[in-house]
Image 1: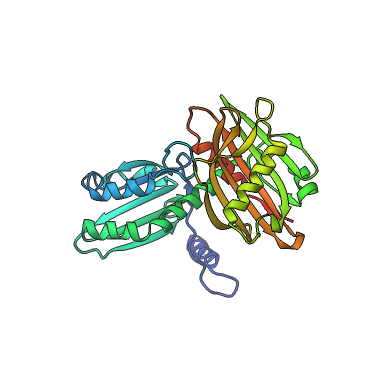
Image 2: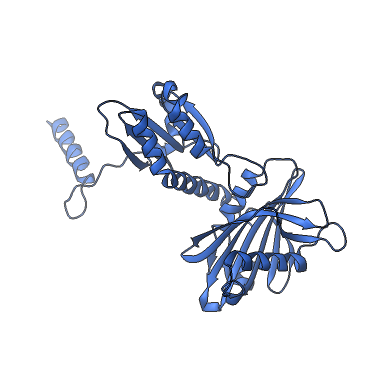
Length: 331
């Protein structure tokens, strides 16, 4: 009898734990394992026949397209394909994956889901009855697909960066800026309205420049990109000298930079990507520049990252700088 009463009480307790204080039922919570995978690696889950045909070509053309602003072609993402039957067990914990499902009974669609098998995780599932249906969905949603995966990879990179942060107190005092960057970086040069932060890497350097200019330095009645290039070159000539006398960093003239409009922590910003070079010296590399509009202080706060790594890949380095700059918060 006592055993029956005990089991009844346990059952009631379980039921109660699944209710909110107002008596409504709580949604069941699943325990998810941590996702896995290298930064910028996308797992493509699709049958080999699709991967080796036009569907695979379309996926590669999209996800392995050249990363904008680099001096040599490097893909936006690395891709790892596997058949649907192999997508089991540990593999399901891939942080970012694209799944292609083809069947005569399926309508063409695109679904974006988060934290299905692990966390954090972004899964994009594309369905269709024919190859043409699937290709149509990929093409139509190309910008959204890239944006979702990039957002996930940036967040993961930022999470890893937060494990060991350098103090940004100096940036707070000088610019009213909070910025998350690792202890591997150091303050290299500091001026009244200028800060240069640096990280040594094998056979190269990763650099961050922070400075501010008046709003009218960019918002003139001329071309925005021309004004940004003039601003960069002016800062380069004053603060970023080259290895020989009279040399300094400028925007490379041979390739026009890419210009986008974006937001950094809710503030409007111009995003510029391109390549830099050193005037009168043989040095060059990629840069990413965010000019954040701060009307309250009548300024653009400019955050720039650039890489010097001759004859080596630079995508991962510029991606790290991107993740750092996008962590910026104005106070």
